[in-house]
Image 1: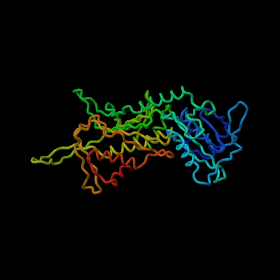
Image 2 (image 1 turned 180 degrees about the horizontal axis):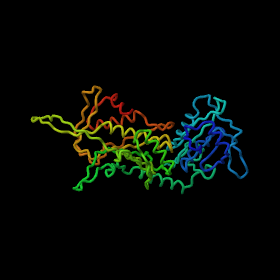
Image 3 (image 1 turned 90 degrees about the vertical axis):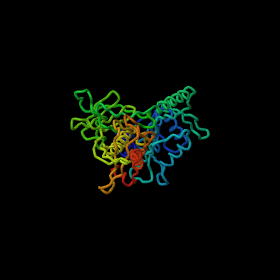
Image 4 (image 1 turned 120 degrees about the vertical axis):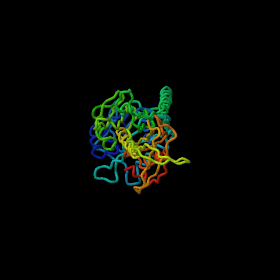
Length: 409
């Protein structure tokens, strides 16, 4: 509605340009000049239908047999001088709908005024529909038809329930971690054997997987590539279209070390081939002996997780800044490997244990969630710290949070 601008980027100039277009009210657009309970009904109807924008504080122009449209010369606005009108409206909508409708609201001050402004209310089509309004006398379960909010018919309510149940079943399907073994394996030797690198994989998706979908083109491919490089997912990344979306590999050296995929349904998969170091240690027990060990680089595991999570938050913000993400982590081809986290002193470290499991195509972490900010779309540093802490504890390493925070930089 505002071009390429995200809601949190919209200011008075974008609002003025939008009003100058004179868009008429429709199934996804409504104007309100002053407070009325119809605002809550309209927000609820958007959630039950196709989603939409409600612009609050705009004078409407009524014409015979035509939908209303805004009057760009008459913007009465609403009072911004008493409290936070966006927070107040959000609370009213949340408190008076069931299940609660969660809007995104942007406050835009009018030019030359700090006391008057306009609220832009955005409501996404909801996978929890049907929603009902709890205000006495209001339309109980509203939907949008053309430019009007009306009560839902019995058939419409049944369709909403069927869709909700179907989407919930889809949302709870298994989410696999992809390791892309064939991408990171070395050449086949004379015996037909291929060296397989130890690999860390991350898979992320929005909690409501069906509510966020992408339509890919070359512009979106390039934008995703820029985001991946910005967040250090890889360096020499080139987007390649796939039947499900777009894939990128870090292949500047000729041998891929990183691969990341973004799919139409919002699923993001990333993997990295891990570096291996060797060393010796003395085994404990009645017969001590020198044992050669293979170590994984913990910093590579932690950095991939943080990079892909930050990258995912920005990708999802293209559609919607506030998203709760499900994160799963796995390791492959890591049987018998150890790892450690260096301490502050260069001569000491926090030692990990040899895992009991073979680490062959195994998901280590699941049911871990990261919330992104509704305004900026950025991931919480505390959620990222929690992810890194979970990884360290899986390796049976107890490390102070102050040390783990260094992996977030």
